[in-house]
Length: 503
Image (cartoon, rainbow, N blue to C red; front, side, top):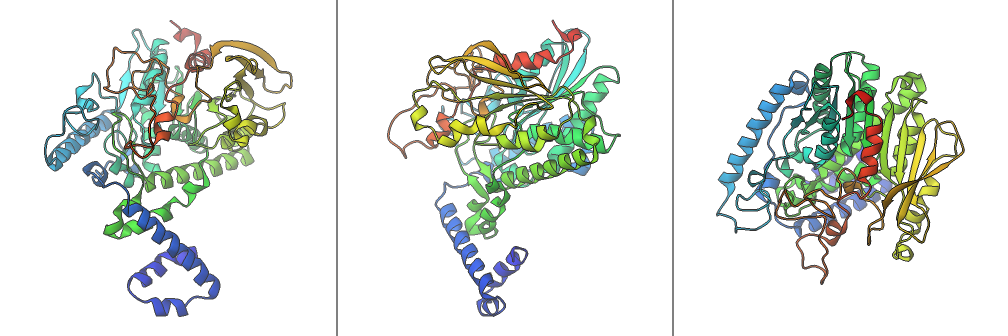
């Protein structure tokens, strides 16, 4: 029935309702009625959404997978520079009048959030070189709707340890959110292959190559390693580091394409967007198109099938060691998928899963969802496991201080050790978007470094007032933006960097 849906809609729109009804049996009629009702509701909801701005309607084309596979790093940077210049000229041509000075919109020249006014435009691919001769290379892959900015602190960690840190901007990112309406996940994967080729070229055969992936970049990191197991001509990483990896997503993403169907009619173009939000963040899209959800589901589905296939054939034994950091509660990706669709299949190769619990002493505990409170107990299979687990949680329910509960691979005994870190006041859990940022981050930090000024610090906003007044929803503002346990995360990554790279 679903395969016939496009034809059914076509017939209906052409006025062939009579022939359509006679060609269907009653179960099909019921399903068609439900689908058409849902589509009508979706069309009406989208019609009430905010207006599409030029940065939503502009969908600049970029190099696709087949072109990226023939491109080198220098060619990618040149194409990227030309792309940014082209977008700047097109947006300038759309500007009806100068924007008010001080308004927070990254696409308006007078805005404090306009990247050209900042010390550095972190939307673009970058390379950080160590002071001395490199001892290795780290390839860093950012997440969906994000930019290379989210990898800057991890890149600096690797650079300080003597590594070249190479962060590539994924196609359709860092420019305009409309670009995400035209991209395929295979383009992101091809960009990852390009970065890995450059990383291996710089590392040579005798120096380590690490790949670090955040969110959607985590899925790409694992996919690149899995592809290299099936095609030995591809460069393979020596170590994989994952931060809030997108190994699985919600079931909504699977059917998100249906939400965009009304957009085939120009009057309902806004149905192609799940969120239309002002773009006040200089290094991340706030608006989110349906295609973004579709592509994330396509990538995670392909990845899960491939990992299961490699495990069944025994080729998963060649997978590099994986170090992953994940909060037990995550509204963006599936935490259980990290365990069930990835770590369950890994060989005993030194892999480690670090899980961050909720704040168990928080006064808001009575208001928390029971499922969230029980999530840790349901998450892991019983020990022994083929990978090490570190579980960061409260030392007791009476204090914010935390400990790590360590269960080595192949063992059942647990060791408890203080982390030296505590939950900040009023923070009840980590969040997906907080993980790669220290609390000193100038844009997202709870205690921002004021030496960089982005005009607005998203991590310190504490707002109170009546609902339906702000141009953005309160969930966006209330979500934790930086990670109070970033020093712990950095130390765990540092532990796996070769000793010759220590400074």
